Length: 287
Image (cartoon, rainbow, N blue to C red; front, side, top):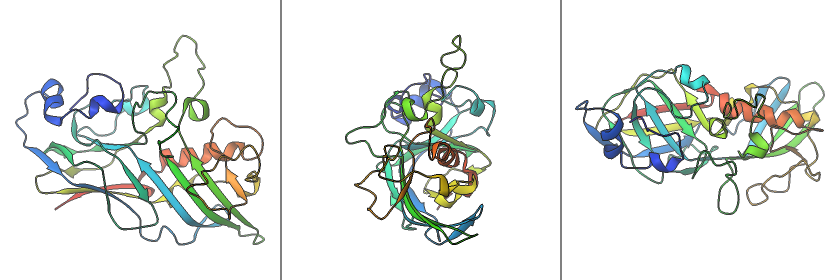
């Protein structure tokens, strides 16, 4: 299923069979449907140590807009401006789930998955609902991509930094500025909203179910200096009060383009979310 346009999630939500008839060719492979779930990783709420800090997450929530599995391994498209990968899409879960990352209870996606009984070698996790190309993808009724709260304890002196973070992805706070006016589409916002992962060899078959596991500890492999964070009372902090309680004193700013206190840490957390790899994201298809 290789969509013919790099557009929103909406074209990918077409019935798999009709899209495949346009762009897959006639492989004769068995069409399948399957339930799909997302879950947190075991021990995600336990303390862990990274770059001189012991971190314990007390709240961690993520919004996933869909999953797409490709028969091709990770390739050059991952590093190109194209948001629809080359190769053949073998399966999709074109629905959403709002996931408690500190719970190992599988939480169902809003729709069943569908595809063909083939071998998937790469996959995509979409961090949006609606138009993946829309410069603005936040607002009333649209969930945050990530909400976090926790405590980071500096190992050298025991200083504690209770922190919160809200992550959204719009052109204004996560877009990469145009550096070459002759190539305005070189860094489209859709690339910031799609996590591309390779390194799998996953057969798809009738009667199976898909489970994606997200471990937020994998987001912190890119070091964050918690001592440089701004206070939650400052303008740099825009955490979501509906998701995070008032215990946090500091915040990781919701931007990759900020300045001042914590200016690099918002970008660092976002980089960790997008590049966490197998430390943060694993996928299984089982009976």
